[in-house]
Image 1 (cartoon, rainbow, N blue to C red):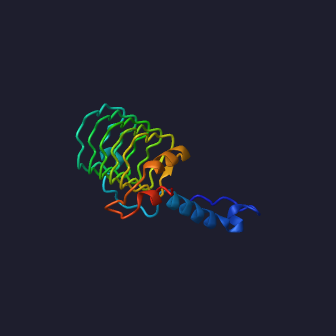
Image 2 (image 1 turned 120 degrees about the horizontal axis):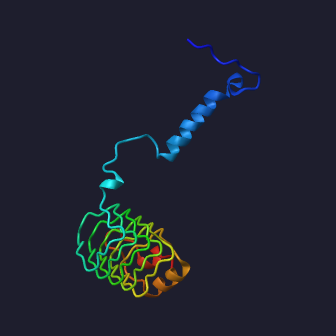
Image 3 (image 1 turned 135 degrees about the vertical axis):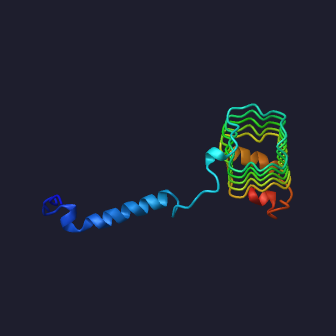
Length: 179
């Protein structure tokens, strides 16, 4: 067995801090990784990836697309009605005039996205991050924007036409936008 290194006064070993630092490192890694390691249902690589593709006019109606990527995608006039898109990535995509009625868009990252003229009737957009996005001319009747991060100008514009109550969450559209 090799000899152990000498203990110098004031070193971490001699002060007894080494076990504390080791435990601290384990706790930091545990928090960073989200708690105890458990098998994932599917890795992100197993999710549908439409990054930088042209999906204009496509029919995604009612599809299970949770945690998919549409980053940089062109999806004008596409039908996403009733689709489950929660946790997806739409960053820098263009979805102008698409149909998202009754879709679950909760927790979607949609920064710098064109949502102009979209149908968002009855959609759930809770906790979306939509900074730098445009919702000009979107129909948001019965949509739920609870805890959404929107630019102030978008929020003011959306409040002008906000009405109804989301049929799934029961949340009033104007209240969810804090109009």
